[in-house]
Image 1 (cartoon, helix red, strand yellow):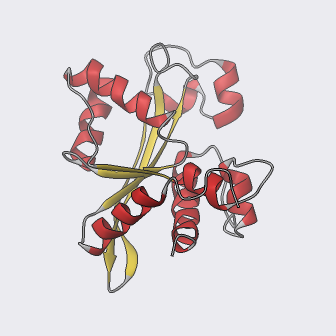
Image 2 (cartoon, one colour; image 1 turned 135 degrees about the vertical axis):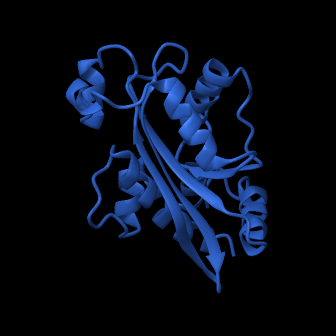
Image 3 (spheres, rainbow, N blue to C red; image 1 turned 180 degrees about the horizontal axis):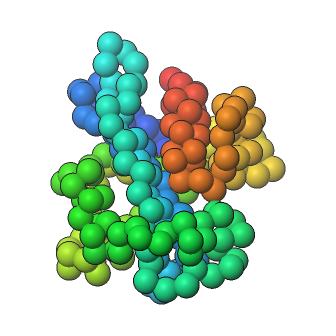
Length: 196
């Protein structure tokens, strides 16, 4: 039994109820220029809008956008996410991209990510503050990393390792924001069943 056993169950139960009621869930991931939400910027934002239909989660829409941070991308970031300055040339800057993202997510979205409470959410919050002078307030935030920590006894709970352990890594390139969204969604479905 994990040392964190059952701490996430309330969030999982709430997420299940929202899905059963037809609330859309936005599984998301992003890649950045670095680790600081204050000084670094989002380079890519990907999300799949899912809704439960006839007992199954179905994709309704998706957003996959690259963002020009307005400065040279550090080599260390490119080494991890393979996004270089050539790739983001001509892409929207943060202000324009944030409007596209806000339009896609809507008000108070139900979001789902991987290690997103400690990382991704902070970048979105900082972007909303810079672009709109307002808070980003999700109605529900399900973090699949926390679920994996509770339910899987693994030496590492990195998304790639969890997905491989669950045999759901086929055809995916990790540290690609859309593939990470797919990996998060695949892992979430299996982990959610472990709370039954």
